[in-house]
Image 1 (cartoon, rainbow, N blue to C red):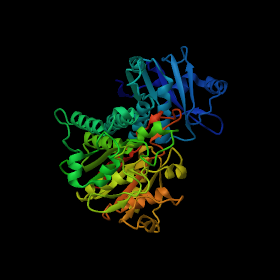
Image 2: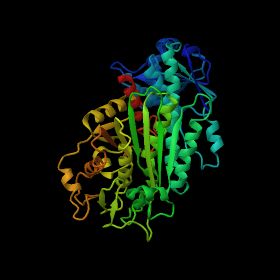
Image 3: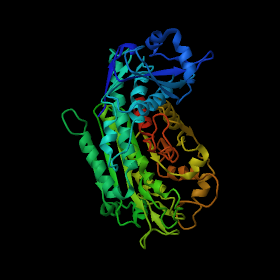
Image 4: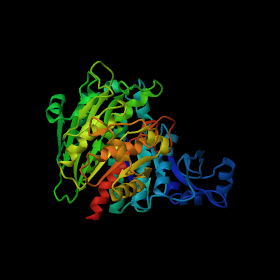
Length: 503
């Protein structure tokens, strides 16, 4: 396990195996950023010709490795591009890229901009997550783990300040939560079916609450019999086609002095075949990621508790496997959601909103100040925003607070509307209270959000549709690695931090 420490020291005199320095784009050529000043002095007038010869530009994502000879104490200098200006988001991406550039080094010094707590956080989170790898199913897993540095030193002129030290520790908590989310999302779907996923959440909660001074987190797991007794028709209907029964996991973190109550709801479809409205074979293997919202809200809850934030959190995680069998829900069936609302099912591949409906009603009964749901809900949102940006819809003030938190967290979200005419579409069923789906081609992501809103009891609420950025099918980029990304965890934690700051 890599250890992160703070030090106020000269990067040119640091004797680690490698030193990472940021490069900024400039009108008269690239130059080393804050943090690399001593390295620039060590190279003197040779620096600009060297950067020019190596073709260094400073553009974001650029990584260049330079053997140093005797110019500085470390044998390897790693130059990473920051773009045109220093921002936490740029530093996070650069730190992530640098983590993959230095392998088989026992120690690494990060001389990236780190003069403030938010920059220190960006450095640590970026490096920790950029070096993430899911190796549980690799026969050479130990070799991959051994290639990670044992020690990473974050060089900061503010290293001795309490708030800087706190930022380093808190960044590791958040990064570990994101990494744990990625682990769950990357696990093969046959090994993380609803009962197994519920057991994993129980195990993670027990680990988080073990030891002196650990937070107290309550957990309840509702099995299929309990779900039937409660009347959670959405979860039971979606899970009916699978021989792995559904679950509903509920977590409660209620610290003393909490002035705000936040409810989190996460979609936990452990595998989505589409049901009888079956998906195309191409890309179906990625449907193991359809529980990314559930993983995110669980790990965000555990991180909020680990950080000791005085915010009450009630978390609801419906879990089901959307499969095909003689017992599967059919298009045309009517399901009764917890609380009594009936829904006509018209497309069994629009299953996420059905399990979320049960969980949202459960959440409203706790009378939270705010509800946030996180779900890989619609392909429509991917069409609208691409595969790197998530959509946010709901109560205007809550949406804005989510967007603000996302900026701090370094995640990309974009506001989307819920037009009032969508209610005409969701109430178009002739035999039930609501239509789960319709066949109008346009605005499907907005339709889904309007459907979910029906189960929020008018409470302040936002829906985070992470269908695009929850799973990276291509290569690594910055601190985001292929497979599960852990998106929304950091945003949820920063949303809770902002509640505390409001007092």
